[in-house]
Length: 460
Ligand SMILES: [Fe+2]
Image (cartoon, rainbow, N blue to C red):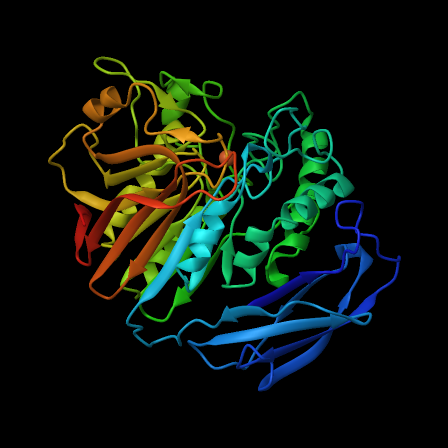
């Protein structure tokens, strides 16, 4: 685990700390009253990292909850709760995790996290768009604190604004998180070193360096993720004993530019270019090594953009989203063929990005409804992005008709709760009827199960 905090008495105004290092004491206890302290130490909060601290605590016992607290400058933090993973080689009976993405501050309230906390997950996985970079739009339920963010201090103040949300704070203080980013942590739909806006590569790389730096400062990440120049190593592997293996991907930093422009397009020939990649060669090879050597019952790929092919045009011709795996056909085929040929155990791809729920079987042949699945993809909706939402996107009947591997869709806000056992994964799609006001109830419009050893979604 990584214990995270940041000293920032004026969080959205640069932090308000003196230009000096400050000692932060930390303690880890076996009880929430912080009586049975088992580890303690001091970390330096330094100005170069916006007085954030990332404490990697070693030597704790596996598979149990711990409580922690910080003390600095006469102030004491609230008590946080986190837990260790089960030991390598053990076979846990169960893992409960929830995954989320896309929490646009201005679109509404993070009520979804209140419901998530009530479920007591062992682990939260955030799949990106933790912040958004845009300017305030008057009339929205909540407003951003500056114009579009570009500099390091802009990104720091934006992260700090999001971190003032009580529901988000409480969820961080209630369970460990695995985080990865998508595009809005930097700039909408950027690809590697290519900006959405009219920025040069050099400008985008400078902006990316600031954005990555602020992301590292505000997330519970290990020292190995410390940014270097305009790069930051975010792809990594985490395991939950022998039950589940999380392969966390970064489909933004190393990708080639979206082919045939952005948005939904008929595929141009660049879609089939073998050099087009979402992962980059190094990460792709790393992922294959991770999956190939995994002995876990479940192999969970935590990543950003829709992997299943979804054709949005009924009948002849295709309309595909170029920012997703559908814009990178050769790269996707290599992944799916690898899962199939190497018989990777029970692949479950979890995805964010598109502010709507989807549940798909992953196929080598998308046209044949009877073709066997090589894995499943659970796409979780946004926490808030897009506002209150709707039952479904317009024209969903055509999308179902055209894509036999699509099992379900909803355009409400929310998150997904999963319970993983050696026999099955159960996924409950949780949705909220509104986010523009606080206090929404939670609903479960659809649940699926996947049986170990049998690829494909089944109704729960
Ligand atoms: Fe988003």
